[in-house]
Image (cartoon, rainbow, N blue to C red; front, top):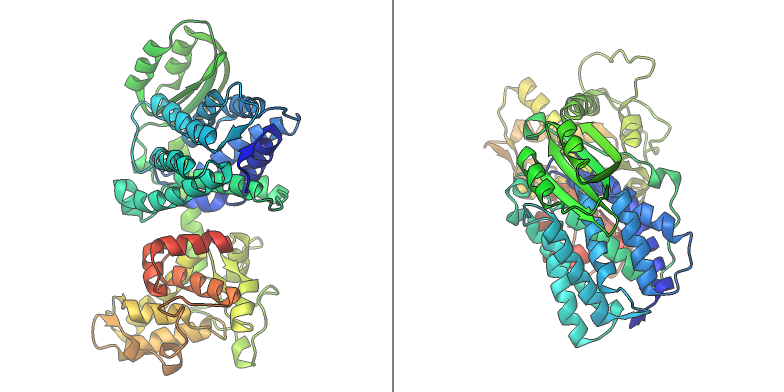
Length: 515
């Protein structure tokens, strides 16, 4: 176990943390609904920390002070968006606390984490709980206590992550916006991923290499609604200091916008603010120094464009039939390979149109390899947003059956929904459609129950034994994925289906790299 770290180890920890968040940036984007649902937190945090990684790769830091200082300086100048600026502030505090240190032990690193939290809270004009601020604060508090138990950097980070995960799960109930969306805080999740990567470096794990696909800037703004935007322009700029106090400027910016965060070092300060008058903000900024960089984005235009894109994807993914596709594994029997349209004439696809499975692959909604592993062939496993797609397909077939049969079934009760999720569908969508139609016809109440489902579906092996006493990691991972799909990505509900508590589930998700 690493009790202390030097400059070289800090560098490796930061590089590993960069890989961890970059590989998961899209999963974090999918969580991003606060303070603005613009789906770019993962992208912004990833690109921000990549600037520090690039600078660290150029040097061989002799001390932990040097490594932390280079990191903080690069992060400030490369910070993107609200989450990127806050991330830079967390590391600015770390650098401040480690100043003059050749090495750092557990107590020093814990104190550095606390100083980072203080820097972030001081820079955010109106701190909101249930965010990265809360997660980092409670993680740092636990780190300090952990250092008293065992003065080891590795132990301190391990305990900070454990507390952070508990806090992250609670952010849903702390923040009304997160509660409405049923998600945890995206920034808090990103921060824990970075800490997790740093811990992996300390444990001597091999750092994965980033591919161009991993590193590209690609955010998902599916949840962005124009009515959720108070101010139009996302405004970020850097000013080289003139020596004048920026407190009056801070008050000025607070009066013309929201989501205000200001990070600074000895030479410059960086501003992130949402406002309707970015020009006035930039003009006023020049009273406090030399304007070096500015970036302004119209969030309302983004909202309109992204809403249109999301609607197009939703329409395609729920109505395009299961057309033949080379990437779909062959079924076990001839019946498994029957292709059936989901009602209506064959659509007239344009030259650049994609059939159902191609779209799923393009938008990373299906894990075909996992589908083969679970079913032997045929029905693939929907992942990420695809979990929502799977439920959308079931709902699509239910709506279709209601219309055709003159019924008014609302949906499936929890037990029936769980049975559908854990069943290893052996064929394509034909069986799913017929199962839903038959159950709709037989249902006597508002909801379809297990009584209306075929015996082989209801009697399928459970996703997990109540004790969760599994010995085979492969089947355990598969069952967790099915439970998450059945619970619409809600981890609390998935834990109940699996018969475990949320903390155990979060540990399993980290173990198998499930986002």
